[in-house]
Length: 102
Image (cartoon, rainbow, N blue to C red; front, top):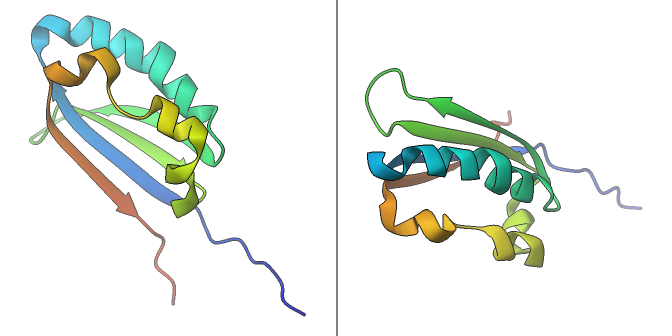
């Protein structure tokens, strides 16, 4: 008899800079369109944005995701990316983190 033990959630971190001429529109889109769209995707458990206090890209978003499979759903594939802001985004960095196990 096998038990399916769910793995602990992972973190998905995105850091970017945005052209200042598009910053207000980008932030409005990210908060009112992008994050709600991602949160509606299966396995996207939480989302929170941050502003850098020192060094690196100005904006960071930290998502808690249920596992690797979340990147392959049709819902995610339909909403991933920066849409019309893609040409104005620079310094894109994505990092995925898994909990340490002992």
